[in-house]
Image: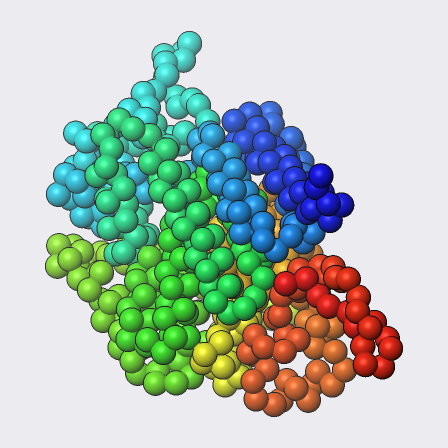
Length: 500
């Protein structure tokens, strides 16, 4: 007959699996039935997003009670369930994967993605129906574009109305060289007529690989592997990394690989991985300060050479047009006039806002570089990437994907509030909502971080080693202790043990 303790372990494991199964079911239902671009379901989509985060928090709470021996299995099964649910339907908050597919398709035809915008007549012969649906005739004889995620534009030569699922169809691509190679590699596996699911399938594989990698890293660092669920079960990862297939998922994985390599003393290879990450999304450049404390020239040279090599084929074919839409995008996001920096703009206006933002990031980068232990750079990455997100205040939640693996590796759950705050801005496009949500998220990070540090936190901040994962900072809580049978000590008092 099973012991009472055995039954307790079984019940805890069952509750952990049940909670993440419910989370996956709700995610799958929303992906199939709801869509942010559908105005009739907009409010239902917002409520669904909040519900997913609530269920995620509940599932992580119940995971704390799962016995240590079952944790890895529960985390990996949960990641597979959540990821599988996320692939159940088409993209629902973004059309970026349509651009990914188009960039891959034009490259398969020997055309540089930096040469022509999607509405260019030069690529008219390779337009696929799912990326360029036909126009619909109206009663008055005019033509219009209909359908979810469908934009209206004009052919660059004939000026005829053109319908497309690619956003910003009149501008060149913005994505760097490594991303473009990823796009063509994924699209080379399927016929042109296949729509969104290839990027979702590869996104699922990447997400699961990162989850498994986090488990391995955590165990090798003698930390609790259940923290990997902060990535594998996170609704933001499921939505923006898998359902909407954002390239940030690959960039996040490469940033983690670079940090692992540098932490293990393999700085040349770490620099190569960092360069590949930067050549995927540019943003991973903010991961550099935490890696440059020791022998920085190896990392810098490795990253620079790798970045150049990924761009070189496109520069040879296209020339300076490889910058694509990047300058226009920075202007669109308010970087040039400072309006995009939500936490700074209320106090400093105009171009001075951008200057202040850059100065803040330089100061944070200097502190991270100075305080990070080269063998334990995880918390430094959280602080640097998190500070970048707070300062940049992006409109798009998928920018936070690069932060989440490092949150999992440090157990600094409070930084997940950054991703949630940005998500709220996307779903409720109200004027001041970004300032308010980011302010709340920042306050939570500051308060919880000070509380973690305990008394004398300012003195420790000034001393060496504060960014290391050892000690109280960043240590994952152990599996809930269960005292074994007591035995009398030499002093006649019971000695308590802890569960292994």
